[in-house]
Length: 205
Image (cartoon, rainbow, N blue to C red; front, side, top):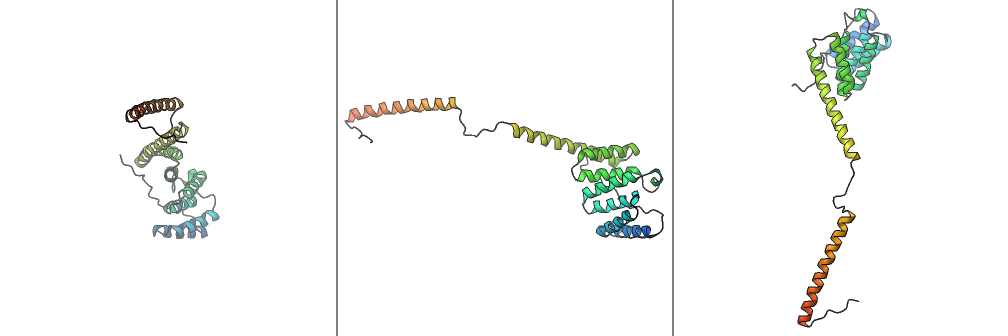
């Protein structure tokens, strides 16, 4: 199984409206194509201010943020695009593209539960999207690994902690008795040797 996350082509969208908004969007598109994602972000941010209810401006801003590794911001921006999406924008920007890129951004920050939901919604709109199928399977795998790790950590934190040299009281008593028996045998043996040799130890006070 392929283990990499498939990223969308991130083609920025330019609508046919004219005016200052269109010029800002065009400047953002040009910067994006040239790989100047910070400039593209600034332009698309301006476009969202000029037309805050336009889903295309938010979507393009999300793509620029994603390209810069700002995945949390990108996810919020794709959600903003999704909430503003309407039937009339379907020709220029379809809902499945927004959902797919939203899932990718959520995957990147480790929010696998939300990513799974986004990919599932993507597939409701486009059941033939093979990349979405792949990313959905990968997100489920990562979520299971995340849950297994959390369970292991929970089990290790609740397990009783014992020192490796910690000896129970019963075991300590047995060791003490064995030590006393050995000491008595040694004393008796030493006394026998002393009687034979006539030597007596000095008192140790």
